[in-house]
Every structure is written in structure tokens, then in C-alpha cells.
Image (tube, rainbow, N blue to C red):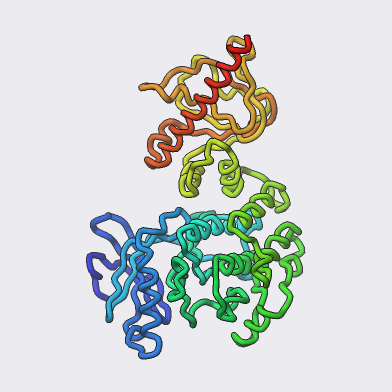
Amino acid sequence: MAKKLGKYELIKKLGEGATSTVYLGRDPFAQRDVAIKVATPEILGDPDKGRLYSHLFLNEASLVGKLNHPHIVQIYDAVVAEKLCYIVMEYVPGHTLEEHAKPGHLLPMDRVVELIFKCTRALDFAHRIGITHRDIKPANILMSGESDIKISDFGAAIIGGNARTQVSGVGSPAYMSPEQVQEESLDHRTDIYSLGVVMFQLLTGQLPFEGDTHYKTIYQIINAPTPRPSSLNPMIPEALDDIVARAMAKNREQRYPTWEAFAHDLAQAVRSRQLLTPRVDFADTEKYAILRSLPFFADFSDVEIWEVLRFSQWRHVQPGTVIMRDGEPGDFFCFLAEGELQVSKHGKPLSRLTQGACFGEMALLGRKPLKRSADVATVTDADIVIVRGEALQKSSEACRMHFYQGFVDVLASRLAVANQRLSSN
């Protein structure tokens, strides 16, 4: 094996398929590990398939720098030449979801819902920049850590509605939508169907449609009723049956019309406590849904919401708990996700805070941290989101900008309320 490919140092082979080999490499300039997918020379020289696979590499190469989302494998670099094609991508250590799509290796239901939720957010991001993946399956979803995923392999994607990208002969029939197996025009709803199949398989360990031949599988996809996951696993609640059924509707007009609608139902299933798993903490699905619902975060992008989710702390708090004390240093601020709080000074009530309130930020807005000017305590059970000043300073520039804009809006709202009170006295 050559020790270098262009500027990249090759460390070891990670995997090999019929059309490409993937290596672990090192980018000496960016000082990071990368995954390098190299087209098999024989396939590029094949008179029948060479043009197809060159096209797929070119398709993926066109996405360099565009897929900047925490749940999509980033594409850093690409070389597409007549005799050499390779794609340089983010290296994700771990395994694919294939490992958890068979009996005996299934993940808990709450984990499945969380992973599928993250897929919906990633594919919504791709859809918003004009990309339909077209080959969603467990093998193209990488596990990153315990509960994160990254979607990979956009070679078969439809980009910008360009019919030129709708080449035939790619994709995995078992995960294809009825319109895809019939080679009809496609939109994002074909990915919604495919992700529904992945969810079915992660819940049951089986594919919904599987024949002895591709033809028999395709016939079932078009004609056979879609089974409910609970028919294979009676522990699956009705809510998840309904989500899979809608995602996999044969008529695309009856599927989820948007990724947001799909994600909403997944989040509702988590929040309704139907997944029969003990609650030990906030799931990422729930955290995302909460942040997205708070007015403060209305202008935050999807990527920035995930960033906040990562550096914030989340607490369930009982009534009578003091969150902030008068005179203490102010090195964090909070959002009230649920419940009611009392603001008081020397035991005298000043105001009540309700769901969505941002509080404690004033101590962080000066040139140096200030001390708290009041006590804040819970009146009811409450869910609190805590952001430390140090974490905010280390966040991305775009994320910080949106926080500061949010603080301005909060202060303007408070001034308006104060003026209204003064004018009424």
C-alpha cells in the first residue's frame, strides 16, 4: 500500500467493497485524522460501470464544504480524474447501524427514537440546501459515541433538483420507496420512506419487505400491506407503530410532508413517556424539541441549536430549590423550560418567571462578572437549562451572536414592561 495519497498520509485500511476501499488517513496540514474513500481502479476502467461510478464520485465531490451539520459526515476534499477518484471525509470511529438492525443486537426503543430523530434533523438540513440523499440505510448511518449518528455516502444524492443526478442502478432495493423502485421522479419524501424502513428494522431486527430476489422485494414494496412493527415485537407502543406507518405510506401524499412533521411526532413519543424505559435524564430528542420551542432560540439555526444542546446543562428541580442567590458571583444564566420560579430580594417577592424565561444573564454582560442582585427559587417542579459563561465564550461566533441578540430582545421586553408599570402608576 502506498504511504501517501496526494498530501494525505495513509495509515491503515478501514474497509473494502466492490467499488471502493476506505482508508484511515492523516491530513498533515489540518492536523486531523480523515477517512479516504478511493475508487477501485478496475471499476473505473469497466466499460459499463466506469461512467456510473465516476459520476457518483463527482456527485459526492460537488458537496465539499456544504454538509456542515453535526449529524452528517463532512466532506473535506475530493479528486476526480480519469484513473483516480477519491473523497476525503471526516473520520468517525465506531460502527454503522447495521450492527443494531438484527435480532439479539437491538437498541432500547428510546435510543432508536433518538437516533432516528437526529437523522430527521440531518436530512432536513440537507433538504434545505437542495439535497435528497436517495440511499438511506443502516450501512450509511455511522454511530458516533453512545447516542450520536452521522449520515454518510451522498454519492447517489439528487442535488438541487438536477435530473442528471437521478441515475439508475444505485441504491438498496429493500430501503427504496415505491416511487424509487418504479424509477419515478423523486423528492425528499423518498428519504422519509427509507428512514421509516430503517426505523422498522431497528425496532424489530427485520426488514418490512424481503423477497428471495430483488424482483420479489420490489413487488412487495409496491403491492404488499406495510406490517406494523408491533406485529413482530409486541412491546412496541402504538405511537411508534403510527410513526412508522406514516413514514412508510406507499402513496407519498400520505407520508409526512416535511422532516419537521416527522421529527415532531418522534419528540412527542419521547415526551409522552410511551417508550417503556425509565427516565434517567433528558434525551437529546427532548432537549432539541424544548430549545426549538423557546422563543429565545427562534432565530438559531439547526446547527446552532445542536451546539447549545451540547454545552448546556439540564436539571429537574423540585419546589423550593434556590437556583441563584443574592450576592453570589454570576457565572451562569438559565432558561426555564417548564415550571414557575419566584424572584425575591431580602425575602420580598419581586416577580414570577414562567416557561421560556431567560434569567441571570445580566451578571455576564458587563466587562467583568457581576454579583447576583436577587434570589431565584422554584415554586413548582421545574426544568432548568443552564449555560455557563465560559461555555458561551467558547461557542461559535454565530452562536454567540444569536445569544447576544436574544439578550437585547429580553432587555427590551423588560424595559417595555417596566415603562408600562410606571405609566400606569
